[in-house]
Image (cartoon, rainbow over all chains, first blue to last red; front, side):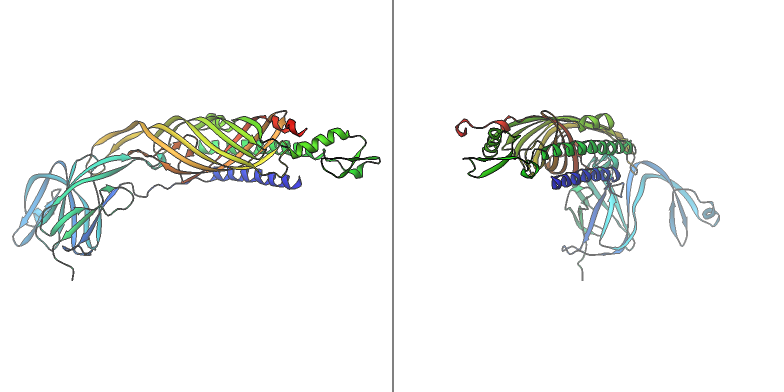
Length: 202
Length: 278
């Protein structure tokens, strides 16, 4: 009987401890990033993974138009600004203005990397990405077809938008070809898109 | 909100544990007093009994015929000892004190006072809104568990039980989830986030340890602590189920749970002896 009492008391104490542990602990496994990103990985034209040596800037076109201010001066590079600059005018630049599509920089001056991460639009069926290279005069344009949908893992983590990639294509300034590797864009860190650049790794 | 609920749970658990402890010690002590020792009496009689083939010494205050019958009962315990029906008291308390709760009943067979196959049926409800994200989750659905407990006490005849067991749990349910409008921070635009009647089917397993003590006649009380693991669940494209009826919240891959049970024990087999053995 004494043994049974000891066992029973142990279980009672154990249950109380467990209750207190449950009361004191609150797990939170929410992702740190609030925006889900699409992962692009770089390859040469033969499929070898590479770190791309050029500096890349990726912008995307947004709905609507904006006014840009273009400053030109003989012997100087042309400057395009989102706002007028009085100092440039006073220093001899001539200004003209024009309407153009709104855009946003998604990746700024990425250099020597083997991959990049780009957000996708929540509600558009197709996103247009413009890839600018520091050493090439031409840009590449990438068209990504996808379906975005909201997803809640836990209520305490809030709402995130996942995507299902459906199609992809690009121009060929520096890109040999492009393909979808894993279409599910979520928090699992999948290699979603493979960009095969012109040339082969040495 | 959650802190006050947990505090209430801890307080309630502690009070019930203390009361159960007193009940169990009193009940166990009563069992102790039935032991007869020859040293405590001055006058003894000798009885030779064909059942045991041994000479037994008894105090003269004890009826030898009854003692012989008791020995026969020890050897001839019937396989089917009856059944118990029980209700969980923890679920309704949680229902009034927190965002979720349940009502649950169980039917348990008693096989030789050792094995207890059991079916548990319940109906659970969850209606919660996260304070930080304003995401609202709601579900109301039945659930089922089947399994078996094993009485770990050496003395199987006593009214108290210390048991371990396993359960398989199942629930097929729908849930609603909604929250603030979604806004695209780069491209712009907003859309509503509200989904109704998302389907889910979940299967899980539980490992159980618990005690059960007699409080009055055929009424018992007991508690169990349960470690649960969800091993299969269908998921919606838009949201995982936050609360699974019968399982609990899904904030981690395993969940702890517990029950406080009021039990009505129809344990007739303990006093029954097969006629052929008389």
